[in-house]
Amino acid sequence: MQPKLLQINVTVNSGSVGRMTEDIANVAISSGYKSFISYGRNNNGSSSSLVRIGNNMDVFLHGFFTRIFDKHGLYSKRATKKYIRKIEDIKPDIVHIHNIHGYYLNYEILFKYLNRLNIPIVCTFYDCWPITGHCTYFDFVGCTKWQTECNSCPNKKAYPKSVLFDNSRNNFIKKKEIFSSCNNLTIVVNSVWLSKIVASSFLQKMRLRIINTGIDLKKFQPSYSKDILQKYAIPEDKFIILGVANNWNRRKGLDDFLQLSRCNDETFVIVLIGLSKNQQKKLPENIIGVLRTESTEELSQFYSTADIFVNPTWADNYPTTNIEALACGTPVITYNTGGSPEILSEDTGFVIEKGDITGIKQVINKVRGLGKDYFSEKCRRRAIELFNKDDRYNEYITLYNSLLKLHEK
Image 1 (tube, one colour):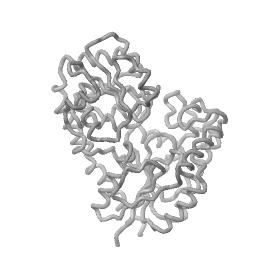
Image 2 (cartoon, helix red, strand yellow):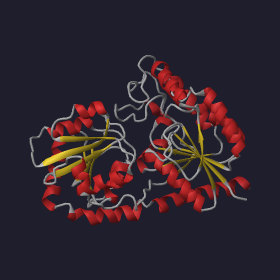
Image 3 (cartoon, one colour):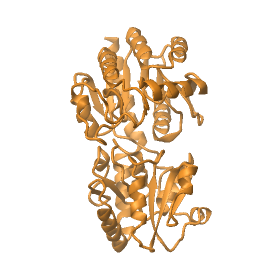
Image 4 (cartoon, rainbow, N blue to C red):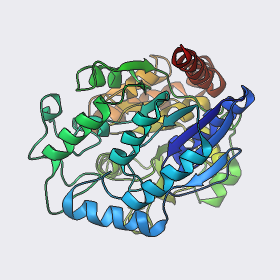
């Protein structure tokens, strides 16, 4: 009988995790699975059967009440109960949950139901939210309360932002109770760094696997484009420094790029992709701002045409943007944070300490002196060897198969 895979994520085929969900679905379908994807918002089409959880008003209200009461993931009760009825119709053999957070799902209702359902559950962690009382990244503020019990959160204003109440202690207790009681849960992480974090948390006794992120190497490949330069008025004679993020803020390194732009070097230009219109208006002359794009073809052209990709993220897990840059033959500079350094080798990128703008400039000068061609082939080769989506996501299929066999016994 054809096994049924149900994946749950905030988005479908949108953003790095949304594209990953779709890629896993495609590998699963080619391996004989019937695939379903449930999502909260942003549907870019899929080869799977799609089921939306709630609607735009549910997302708005979940976000609104989170801002006030700091109970992210505990709203959307009616939407989640209605969604559970759809799960009962699907009758999945295995459920794979991606980003639980995102203002669309009540994790308490969902996990209590799945635990009663008694089928294998795979949950991929892309950040630290499942093991904290509030934040996605505690190292941004140097907090260690997650190791014992969260309270008086020093990162309350970070996503998922709360402007009034601090419910971090109760959130921590609730997550510990709900996630620890899921008997059939297998946790997957994509970095060694996050695996060590989970192994030090209240989920340390859970089954844990590392499966690195994969990308589509046919979509992300060297593709230098004069058209992209002309379209966005990027000077062809300048050394192009590229930055890419879904949401630019201090954690993602926007302030660091602004500092870099003030070094009075007229030989380079900075291109930032993923800015809001308001951020775009406030940029200095030597930064070209581009709004968020869902076009992988255009992203690939940006990566390929840039001379270097800079990712000054202050807190992160395993940034897909680093991998996409390598696949397009472009060397990477990243801060020494999370699992970001794990993606690079000595001949494909550079790891420097957080906030070291002087260090960024020194590396830029080094790459400029050697020339991008010195790195390109090595970058592409590393992407092929380690980050081919077919190789990586077949690991998920192997995991699904083993869990289903274990469940049958």
